[in-house]
Image (cartoon, rainbow, N blue to C red; front, side, top):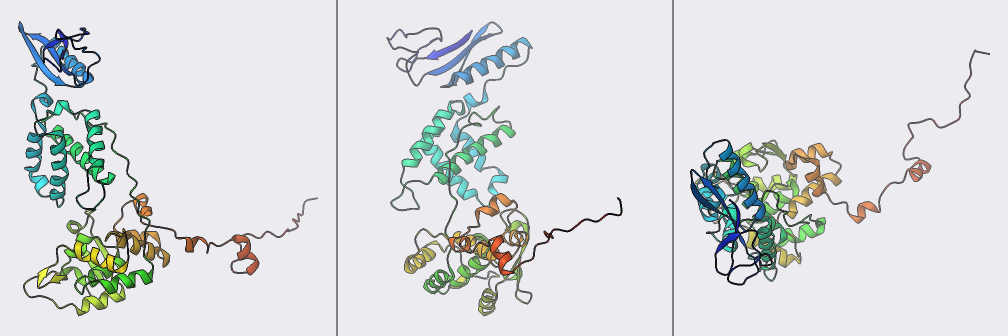
Length: 386
């Protein structure tokens, strides 16, 4: 009873105490070892394949011994019976997952995980080391979206996060006893964008946009709405008379409804858009609802000479411009839909032009632009007491 090692060369199993296999391979120094546990139940010897993790094998052996002592039913480790491909199919078949707007993104992320880790790999074989190797390999692969570049760290981080979410959901549904990669370190990402357009740069971009793209870009630049919120905008959400857009909770990323004021320029553009009879969508192309603007937007950026400027960067511009216009943070966060100040701050970029215009207290006093609220002049304190 105890731990066993499977020889990587001859596949024979032996006690963990053995230093060398009969085939001549030094087991202790060899890589790619597979651990098993062996125990007796009702007079019969049983063995379970655990995987490459010695710690997992020791943990499983402790569970078996405890269950046997307490005379409980010993269930075989679920992670040793379940493959990653089986969990993948089960996960995508869940009604709660099918209802997600990001289900296609989830499927794409997990497809890369299955491609490199294999559909047939047992969940018990997933270790922090195998996930770190996956991340390292993905970072060297060419990007499918950015020509001439490798896969972005943010993409790899999202893929591993999706894998952890899949395993955590399997634990909640009783498919697994625990998540073997719960504490794995995910690749660090520094994706804070520091690019905002000046008004002249925006006007140049606006002029290079196709006719159907201009109101979309203008709405993003002035309101900070997300791309999906804009493309799926319907006329019943637009109140031109009051100059606002009302989004319900099911239309926002944060699942909280919000009201967005319309810039006068955008308001005028919306007034000029004719309403279609067959659809309630605002933005159309050749009579059909506009769904994808990526190629058209990237082409406009190239013609305007803007490099590395994404559509989502327009949201940064809107939030930054609203701050520079003197609006308080509470109003801006209500418009943008940010829940926390930490995320909101990432969208604000203090430019060098703002920094050189910083106000100095001593200069403001000498120029008489502000008054101090404290009387610093010496006053003689008088008292009736002797």
